[in-house]
Length: 155
Image 1 (tube, one colour):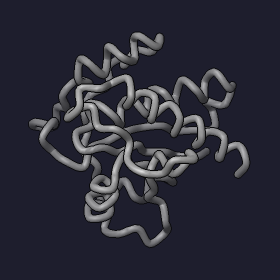
Image 2 (cartoon, rainbow, N blue to C red):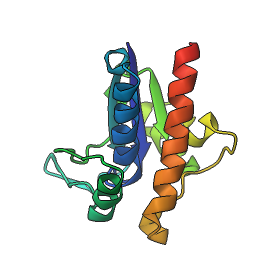
Image 3 (cartoon, rainbow, N blue to C red):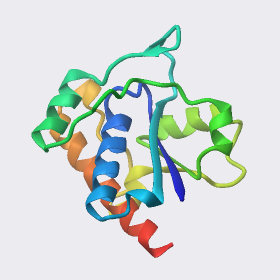
């Protein structure tokens, strides 16, 4: 079983979107039993006294537009202990890679990557927190998750 952690800054927009989109793709492909799928934040700004913020309403809205529900997903922060629990840490942008590496104590096993590296246009996933463009972020994440699922088929 492949354990995948999607990562962004606050775990209220892009990484929960990726978690939900990838989980849906795996289920539709009949492969949900092959994966443990989660998401987390590199920042603690959306986790207070151990209670995480809900997924940001515009992120919920774009997922719902595509027939997906966030369920009871709440923000959680990445911890150093997660390095031993997951096989792959899929980051939304270069800053997430840097911060995840710092939190995880480095990346001696090469587990940290970027989501868009699973597409033919590597780089950052569009950040809707700053642009307000959740559709572009959704499309980037969908494309990246599709590429990741296809790669996992070949492994």
